[in-house]
Amino acid sequence: MWRRGCLLFLCFLTGCAFVAPPVAPPTKSSREVGGVHHIVKRGENLWRIGRAYGVEVEQIAVLNGIGNPDRIEIGVRLFIPGARTVRLVRKNVSATPPERRPRWAAPLPRKSPPRRKTYSKPARKPSGKSKNTTRTHRPKNRKPAYRRARGKGPKFSWPLQGRLIRRFKSSGSHKADGILIAARERAQVRAAASGRVIFSDFGPGNMGRLIILRHHGGEYHSIYANVAENLVRKGQSVSRGAPIALTGRTPRFRTARLHFEIRHRTRPRNPLSYLP
Image (cartoon, helix red, strand yellow):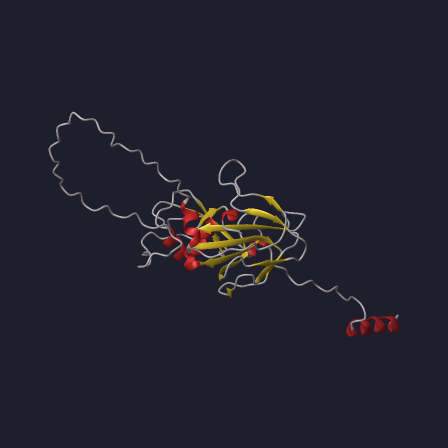
């Protein structure tokens, strides 16, 4: 009995028995990445909200499609990237817009000049001779504003070669802010135009990993969502055609595919109107 007790004691000291299994390193949960949703209250604007969370106003505007940062409807649900908790936006904190209005924001309405007093001339008496002097001028068919601005903006190219499986739809029950392109596993997603990365993280809702590129001084943005791996980081400048992400299976889709958007002044536009 004494010998058995000694052997057990020696095994305990040398670690021969009672070895605990290795503990796996902790992994990041979905709550630690992405952001939170903020409900707009009375007296809040995008400048105050961005200052309260310490997030760039441009990021919030593009991710939520806000064109005018000065006025937001009460009750709107905004996605705040990078935030972990909902914060209180103080109304007494001064958060005035910059002196030079950013190019991504909707232009301010121009003030109409004061009307000048006009004195009408007395009407002439109609002459007896009838002259056919009236002409009808048909207005020329003008293209939408975002197509007229296409020539001034950047030249976009396809970010991925694949089959188009969903088109852009601006209204209706099945609204789609961008197009969906089928892809193979681990295919490279390339920048549609030269620009700077302003967001590279998990996006709102079911968009998964997401990248936003800023083009033409912020007047245009391109969005690449549902990617498996981000190859660029925030603040990085990329050239047109440079690889920025890799496709793969995501929790939302069983097959690899890319969600692609083009936004003009933070508003979603049909990408097919800009792509060659």
